[in-house]
Image 1 (cartoon, rainbow, N blue to C red):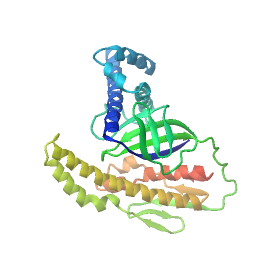
Image 2: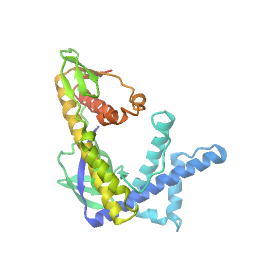
Image 3: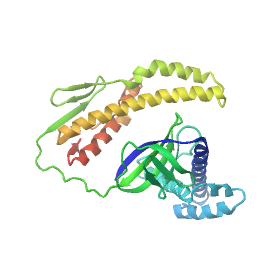
Image 4: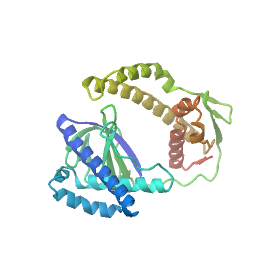
Length: 307
């Protein structure tokens, strides 16, 4: 499986149609979560995903909720699947209890099928052909496509592809091995006494963020000026996120290319982040995301990652 993320260029009409998909998917998710909670409170029963899917047919025929017909049927079913996965993760202690979705901030919906990619266009059911920046060819069979809108108002399509290519066999003769020690002053210190300094992306934007956050707090929530101020705050956070991702991808790429085995320090981030003086600096480092990037790059090359 490979995932490619493309930026979309939508017209105002397409944005309106996509807002309907987002809204319907969010409503179905929240409605199903509420039904599951009420059923458990009433008699400790559990509503399965298939029971909730059967209710979708009834709701589409109900005059009060027949507006759900405007959304693609599989988008609504995907919302129920995501709720089911959220509960599985909760009971497996991998995540907290599912929460209701809000219409503010990031929005998303998923198409399990029916999506096509041709040249610089992506076809979305109920939306039509949408312009996209196809910076990387989509090779393989499209499994799912997740459309998202971030806090800055940009739209993206995350395409999950099955390319049919087997992962390379693990390297049997190990020639290069490096150990990484994570830190705050230096992002990593290698076993070869090489150091990569901490870029401190959030700290560099902290003064700017404080000023914009203060301006936002003085606006009336729901007003046009509030929306403009919130957009400036979101863009500042997005700038930090993009810089951090770029740094982590480049560093993990170099480590994966040059080392058959990378041993990385196993860190309890949840415990460390409880320290009020260090929490902001620790979370700014993004050690967990860096480890995930390094992990899949090592696997793609038949290399090893150890803790």
